[in-house]
Length: 206
Ligand SMILES: C[S@@+](CC[C@H](N)C(=O)[O-])C[C@H]1O[C@@H](n2cnc3c(N)ncnc32)[C@H](O)[C@@H]1O
Image (tube, rainbow, N blue to C red; front, side, top):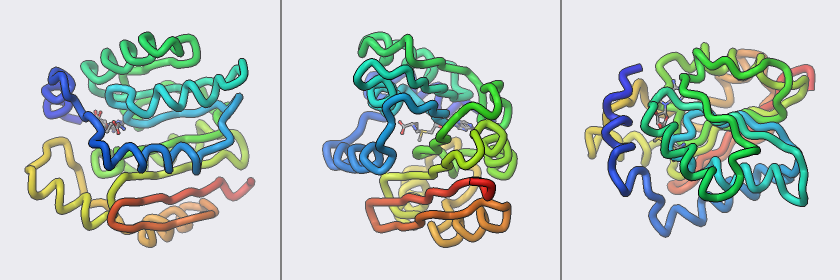
């Protein structure tokens, strides 16, 4: 992908800062992902590590030896993510890879959870990314696609601010659920509201 838009964003001190109203959404995402202690998690499109840090804290809770493989094709974002996990003291639980989901070298068959947080419309090839996620996961592992806005709100925001790096519109949660089912996933939950988007699925063998 053309990483220009996100490279410029990564260089800004306020890069992808969460607004106060969004913090509650992030807490909600983390609570839906729980329990995470000891879990092995791939985070797709980690950006500057805003979710990576609490994910790493959660997988390490109580001395558990969980891991986060955080990947992003934007080198500037990966640098910020490494700084963030270092500053939070959780670097030993995190591997940051400069790669797209489609091109990642994350080991296959060993991850419990693959999280696509606020990245779906940026995926150049969602089909390839989800196929890659299927190979990352252990049998029955969980795939989650989450945003802090509904699909219409997210698309409108992208249109309004002329955001770069957007490859396609955000499908509704129902559309994404059907799309995943057609590809052999068992969808456990699909919901959205103006400030929420959550689709969770498992491989059929789970
Ligand atoms: C809107 S930002 C969100 C970052 C982070 N998830 C957050 O919420 O702070 C989208 C991120 O997805 C990354 N990205 C774009 N295309 C990607 C792809 N094909 N695979 C993985 N990440 C991608 C971008 O570089 C960018 O850092």
